[in-house]
Each structure stands twice: as C-alpha cells, then as structure tokens.
Amino acid sequence: MTVSVHYFARLREELGRQGEEVALPGDSLTVGELWRHLHQDAPPERLMAAVNQEQASLETPVRDGDEVAYFPPVTGG
Image (cartoon, rainbow, N blue to C red; front, side, top):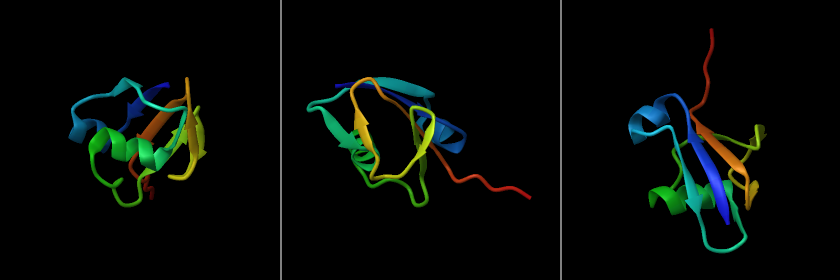
C-alpha cells in the first residue's frame, strides 16, 4: 500500500518536511496507526487530519492511494 502524507503549519516546521510518499505493509491502517508507524509515537494531542481532502478522525481508515494530511488545531479570533 502506498499513500501520500502531507504536513501543515507547525507540524511541517517541527518535522522539517512538507510530506512524503510512504509504502506500507498491508492494505489498510487508520489515520492514527499511520502516524504511529511514521513517527514511532502517539499522535500529538488534538491532531487534526484529512483523508482525500475530507476531515477525518484518528480512526478513519487509510487505503492504498489515499492522500493523508495532518495539521495542528486551527484557532481564530
């Protein structure tokens, strides 16, 4: 399974990259499992995500060819 992963805002700065193409074993993971696979730790508190440009939770399935985006919570005022 291959997915495209993108990082936005503070995450991009902290990780030092905009994204990556990732080849993974198996045919399905969740958004949270993908984060743990890539970063070897639990997702940051209040991490937001999207799969194929639709808002997703950490339990959303990720499948071959998907585009996954991770970004910190957005605040406004």
